[in-house]
Length: 345
Image (tube, rainbow, N blue to C red):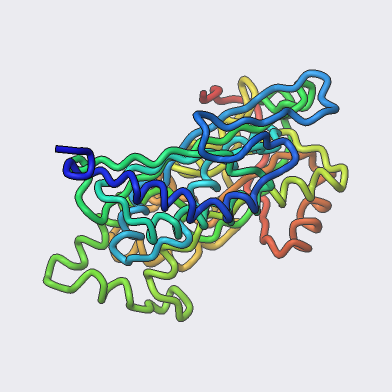
């Protein structure tokens, strides 16, 4: 016997690495040392930092991945993977430096996974970080044919004096919500549960996903549900380039605003969310109606149209909204910092 007979295609793995090499090369930044294919990726810290703090984050895309595989659409899920990691790292004030990926599959499909990695390079380009390397694991007998799993890992850097840890937030500060592109990459277990309930009568899932409910403005469910997560790095960089002082930031992921926004506050601070200040995008209205999901459950599961939050002094609200409007990013005031509450780690 040999490895090939056991289900692991080493030649295919080598061909896959060569196929993705050009796309990865286009993400390289000045700090990258060496190329891909070694035992590790190498990155030289930028100069000019007096007390650099490295910030690391890791994440996946949840069961949104299952929808991508059902629909055989793999070009944007890599963007989601990068977004989930870089947006988390960004909340500390860090600049993303590099990204690594882990791909696991039962049978290596080079064409599909090349498309996935190309999506990662798009995400890295949007966030200004390098795709430094990764790992592809072919695991026959563990994953069924046609199934793959993803995990991402990002490292950023921030000057220690600029590190956002909640202590900068002041009572009276204003929380400005930045629009999401839709469901992003959280809550898909509930999304799929709703879809399952709608196909229980024999309706084909692909037929359901091809439908264009009125709430979606002419787009199909498939198109809306696979819309990639917004990468907020350019927006935050634009604010800082205008000298706007940000006191706190939150990435709205699993658990929605109630779970994530308190994580960027200081001790004994809270924000009463002004839910009436924005309208849910159509996909959330559709999910709530079709799944008979309560408003509380929707709030505690989905971002409901707010993908990221910046907390600033009241005088900075107008400049924040103006700068982001110039980038085409919708915003709204979602609350004000008040005394009380407990810090959520």
